[in-house]
Length: 275
Image (cartoon, rainbow, N blue to C red; front, side):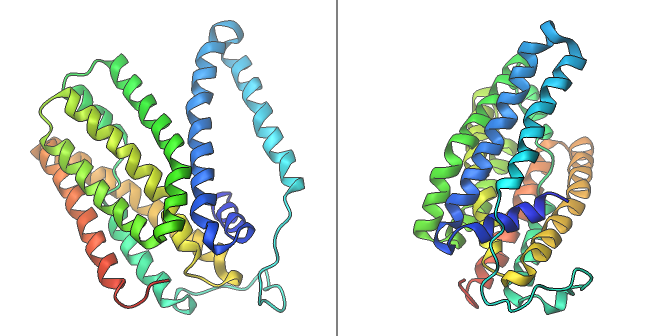
């Protein structure tokens, strides 16, 4: 309910040339909050208890809700009248570049197994539970700090290039986890995974926003998140089955292969159109 309208609001609030920075800033602040929030809960828990932490957590949520009253929704350019709230937009009526990117995203979503598998792999490589937690905190901090600079880079060199780089980085990280022989190597690839997240999460959403007209932007973004979200469960189930049956090397290898397949489809599609 929240994600598609929020991403559409972001897309309509900035010029096309600043989409990478806008989504990069959002992903950076979101990740920073998701890192600082649990740490604050950890500090407050001994003093306030679980109920107290929940009450305190309600405060920023309430402030975010109240801040929405100051958000002015931009009117889409070129739309003469607002669309009917009961109108259904069919997939076939959406632009073909969007539909092709939806297919690419579906293939890539099958490679997006849970991050818990990365942490499990680090433990298998010899890291203690405390060290794994510290490594994941480092991942989130790097992700948060690099999101805006990499969003600016995407605006400068093109959103497509950064999206393609994201596919390639993901494949490289999963190949690294497949063949890593030491905990240090695993941590290095986890930090490279932070670079992928910072580059891809913002750039892919910004690129998506360029593929659809204003009057169907929220619908298209919602469909994208639906397709990716539905495929995340089988992605993790398949990954877990491969790990348990054949070992982590094959599981990570298959994930890397799917990412490379998505990259191939994306590059082939680039020959048709370059939004």
